[in-house]
Image (cartoon, rainbow, N blue to C red; front, side):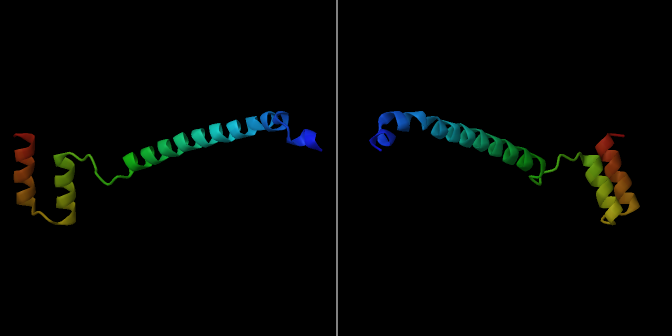
Length: 78
């Protein structure tokens, strides 16, 4: 019975602890990467240019046709 509690028993099963540590490390890095990608995709800040915003405002009815054409001319520089 005393053979079970010798140092050989502890060191022979120590690889399970290392395997658990490595798995924990990989899962932490993977979780960080996933969260990083999701926040970059859905962070709410859109990269719209001025003409897209102007077209959306005109489509919503925020601008009249005259205002739309004036601002579009200002944007395009024509």
